[in-house]
Amino acid sequence: MQALYYMGPERLELRETEELPLAEGESRVRIQATGICGSDLHAYHGHDPRRKPGLILGHEAAGVVVEGALAGKRVTMNPLIVCGHCEYCLEGRQNLCSNRTMIGMTRPGSFAETLTIPDHCLIELPESLTSVAAALTEPAATALHGINRLERALLRPLSEARVLVIGAGAIGLLVSLILRYKGVRHLRLADTNPLRRRTAEQAGLVTFDPRDEAPDANAFEAVFDCVGSAPTRDMATSAVRPGGAIMHLGLQDNKGSLDVRTITLKEVTFLGAYTYSSSDLRATVALLDSQALGPLDWVEVRRLDQGAEAFADLVAGNTPAAKVILQP
Image 1: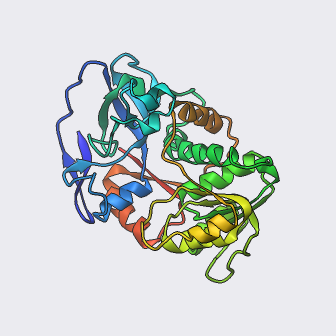
Image 2 (image 1 turned 30 degrees about the vertical axis):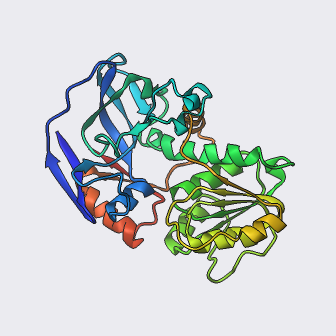
């Protein structure tokens, strides 16, 4: 089969490789669509020591089972492989599993014609949901998980809140679309890339460039930092209202310092969110199938053999697409 290998910082190679044998309790999935995640870009730059050269990246995927218990079924998948018996798994917080592994990180990922994955990670798809849309399940579940966590921290319904979303990449755009679906009326989306702002505006969202127009201080009950850099953390801390909440979803860097004095004096709830639970993923499949997030015309589809070029374009900011999907 063909697979796109990470071979070192900013080096990707399309190679012919053998399919892995199936272990007990696993299925083989033929990949029909797989998305490029921000964490894949992080690895591409050599900034993720967990992803070592010689690895097939990719973990946002949909396809059809060709061997295994669900043979013939169309599926998406939970890329987190969890133990099912630790304290976190038993509490329903499988994303924090003490023994978790992950496709595209500790085992071969989805930038390939097929992959193997435990049966318990598979989620059947309705026939009405396309493979390209289903490949958005993982990032959309990340967005939904973060929204649900922040919503529990607010005293008033989220729909009544003034909300700032920082970053119009895939997660920021999906957060914004889900917030709109949840009834948020006062929503602003900040991004420095004009191509991404135009894409978000075509989806009906209100955007601005924070370099030209800094968000008002103390103006938002809820702030979602979908970039996760020192400047965006500062922006979030300034923009949030006293008593409000910040959801930190981005992982661009760990630089700078957090203004804990301001967070304390404003009594701000500062939250992090990591991935999703199994129930988040299943809820997201239903959400995507309902078309509640509108047309997904902000997705760009390319062939797997164009993967290296797609990574380079994303790094350079040369594509207006919030998500690039590869198809083997």
